[in-house]
Image (tube, rainbow over all chains, first blue to last red):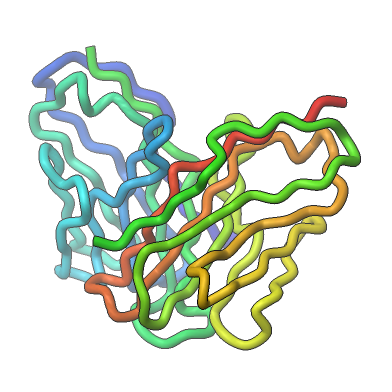
Amino acid sequence: EAQVTQNPRYLITVTGKKLTVTCSQNMNHEYMSWYRQDPGLGLRQIYYSMNVEVTDKGDVPEGYKVSRKEKRNFPLILESPSPNQTSLYFCASKQGTSGFVSYNEQFFGPGTRLTVL
Amino acid sequence: AQSVSQHNHHVILSEAASLELGCNYSYGGTVNLFWYVQYPGQHLQLLLKYFSGDPLVKGIKGFEAEFIKSKFSFNLRKPSVQWSDTAEYFCAVISLEAAGNKLTFGGGTRVLVKP
């Protein structure tokens, strides 16, 4: 089954304790992205990756890191989490980064609910 | 900066009522437009999308949306809602000229359908 998976689905941690949220897709997609969802703000992009070893900042990158060493994986790293990073995080992927038909539909993972105390 | 506005944050209606959710975006150029739905406790699912061609787009579960380029709008409609349509709905836009093919979301509209 074609899907985007995230782990863990739920995480409660404390300020300053490094954590990683994994994201994996089995659709051979080039593009992957991380979003955070906060009430009334919709989803805001944290980082994105156009392909392996190519990453760039989105709208709210502060406090986050990513890496893209393999096509299928795009982990989100919080080196020193703070309470304002308490949020619902979604990973997404899509087939390509140019063109029109069928290239720009993003597929979303199930979400990771993170609480930082 | 590009932005997407959804004017209603919360909508409450009864079953069989008609639904229309507004979405406006702020930038010109070539855009791809999407409506996503998020049922309680679930991840985002694509309802419908517009890339080009007929501006009236039909999606899953009886939803449709109309792209009006002159108004920078992409409103979502459903003639008769069901209790199972209770969810949060997000409009999203990609400007094909923008760096990184970024998908910009509106703030979402929570829809509650009363049985």
